[in-house]
Length: 198
Image 1 (cartoon, rainbow, N blue to C red):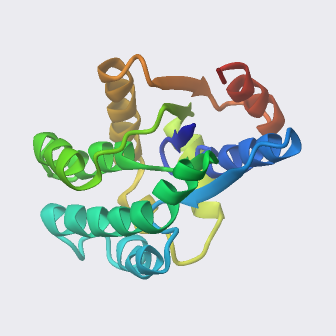
Image 2 (image 1 turned 60 degrees about the horizontal axis):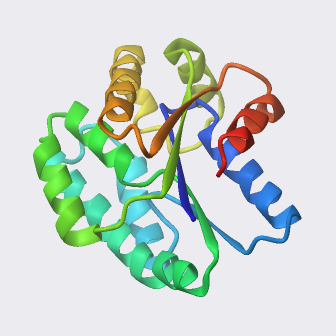
């Protein structure tokens, strides 16, 4: 299976993706952990351009093309081979992030979907959106520190808009996306995630 984790910055999706990887490994399932943007060497190089620096450094279209380039390289070099071997893939973000974030930042959802179909052509089998109050999530995200805070710098209203975008996306893809309440201790949220596995 190809499983992705989504949600606003600071919601705990990265933690949940790693906890699911540990759970799958413990039961003997071969699994590849992935993060977006990133994964392959080329995608990691693009990652720094996307998550560091001035929030306004890229236009929405330029940003979208960078995400697609990183994702395509990662898909070719890591994800597709893992799935072909029969491994599971657990990804900390995938195309749904691009759908929500770039559309919110002035991009066009139809363009994102068209590029996804043309360049990537691979949706996850299952997506967990870790849902959390944006104010709490933003506080957690900013407390992490480090250089990868480009989107946290956009503030609380932006995070609220992103949360609403994920809720709308879940309505668009009800067969694939599951909303998981992230307002609990990590292990409790992990239990909620595991209960939704097929």
